[in-house]
Figure: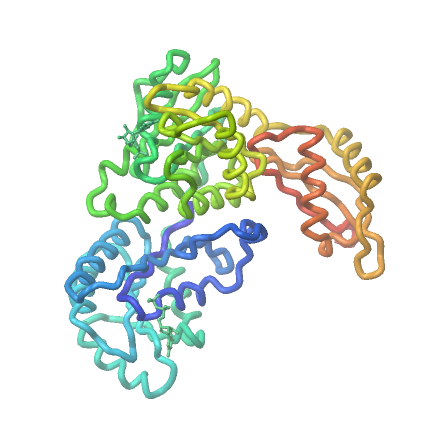
Length: 441
Ligand code: GDP
Ligand code: GDP
């Protein structure tokens, strides 16, 4: 997982402006799907020398100064517990407030890097006003104008120097890592208990606990799995368990370490923005996804309910048309036994390697039944396709106009691959390369 950089500070100091400024232009795959809302509070930033996840911890409800202080304390505490670097943003126009001073005092005591950012320093006049902030007794202040981009480059450089060294990726092993994610109270722990209690699942008594989640190795059908449970950890949290955002961070961390993600949804509550956010992340990270609608026992049903619910889910999760959906009840145990079968099937697809000859047959057929478009007066041509990777299945397609290929034709080819080979539950990646350019080295 990339390190986490958290932005904290009072409302209106410019946190979200700074967030967007650091992020710059970014095209999220999920945004290609109209109607899919996205949590703009966190994003993976990859355009600098080292990747990190940037998180805007703002979003307070309007409150009295007293209540605000409580919220700021919680927010900063969350950042202290979870983040690798903290950006504490102050308002250079408004000057210091008592709550700023209080939070600064608290942050000074933590042993994580905190960068003090004075925002809205748009010109020389505000620079003079900086003096006031030195009263905080800090060695270093970072004046920026988030709105105009001034000082932001230097700030990012400072962030980069404070990032922890990249962790070695988890060694690739045979085992399938399965993350169970979802909002608090959707029934994750109940499901996990059911799953591990299931007679064909042999839990390994040496369950290991890491800082970020509870890992339980187990065996199913002679195959080894590790269950990454984010629910267990939440119970250990202190301040942060009250904060919904905490569960998002936990979900991101768990998904980073997983292969297959069970996105658990509460049948009664339906799909929330947070569900879409975490599922979108799973998709962008190339994880296999199964949608698990839990608490199905609570829904009053007639013969149309299942179909209608499925349609509704498909509308919400437009970017996951390939994800299987299971309707279960952790309470009664209904269909819980189907989950591992589905996980097994999906992880087989995740690891599937298609021979090049078969791929090129499909490519030829696809081109025959739907000719590629013209690009700048030249007919787009595909030469050759090969699978370069599993987990997720990744295909390189050599073409004459690789950079001009439209998303819709890419989607078309993806669908052809799915028609031919399945890949249920698994995102697939197509990478287009110019053959000519490659030849020139
Ligand atoms: P947040 O509540 O901390 O996320 O603050 P916002 O990012 O929503 O910004 C609050 C207000 O401050 C908005 O009206 C912004 O346009 C303004 N603002 C943000 N950054 C700057 C800046 O660098 N200079 C000036 N003058 N205004 C800014
Ligand atoms: P978590 O926070 O996601 O781990 O959720 P829990 O497993 O702690 O469950 C939250 C609450 O929902 C508990 O009161 C459970 O008893 C209840 N619950 C969990 N699964 C089901 C279910 O399938 N049906 C019903 N009716 N209640 C459930």
